[in-house]
Image 1: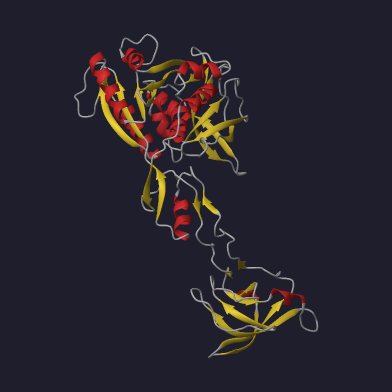
Image 2: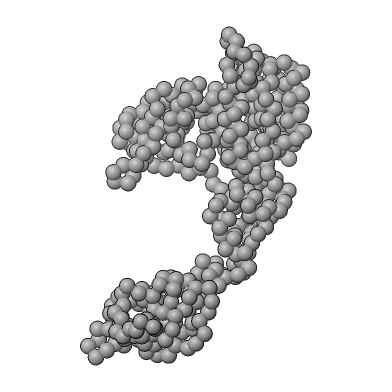
Length: 432
């Protein structure tokens, strides 16, 4: 296991007093390792879990050639022939095939089979003409259409046929190890007849807030104190990520209680998240306890909001010491902690992608730090994206994170942004 000093030495330009935001993720990529334990989950328990091994398709999907729509199936080679004027192909209807069971019979040249959507296509029938495109030549009340005419030029051989295995072929990987199981993935598994599958066990994350000024819900207000919001925000972020959350509440700035909280968290979790107690000049014991109990680095990240942060190990647990301001907690979680936890979960999912949007107004930005400004992203009349910044960008303005639907990411070397300039945005959907 590498020490933090060893990891730091591997990073070009590492400076804990002015660490670039992109260097943080490089550091964490070297620090964290995936959890190896796995367990079985039913398909109803698997949503949001991480797949522990490749799923190989036990069957082909679809299992047979079938019709993509209601119509008439025939040998598409006959489209090269027609009646005397070359305008239409006339075929005799010899039966009807329904979805769910194979039609018993044969279809000779000059004949066709009426088919419903999903009906198995008999051998040599490779083309389906939609019923609304045909002209019925002869019809009886008892038997329906007895012959049809198909205008030439509307179809090509193979049209409107779903081929066996065109979605998945038997023996091929259906899902890869590390996939984060989505509703679509559950449907895919069900289509293969799979009821149970191996998943990585849930990541255990312990969390607590620190500070004498923090009130828990239910406590009476007192002068100088504020109710703890970070505890509930982080609970929501971790729960949405699919973690087992170990809530250790609020821990005051008392050495013995802080030490006990860190030891308890480390004994039962894969990762520990704290908020508060990592800023320069704070009169508290959190930083001392972190250093006493583990291998911990303290950073001043060149970013706004969220400049102070601690990271390291206490026992076998990875520690993330986040700032105390509510917005800074969420921003640092999104930018750094979430990608690291996904890696610990064994997920191969990429970090939240950055999208391009046009800024509706000028944005002030100082080069030499990464800024994450709260914004409202909307669609233009041309179908592109545009974004406007929320007015008050203070790191304690929690309401701005409710009003916003994404972050405007202004990168380290970027300066002021003009109205109409393109910027990167990170959307909140499914995360916050």
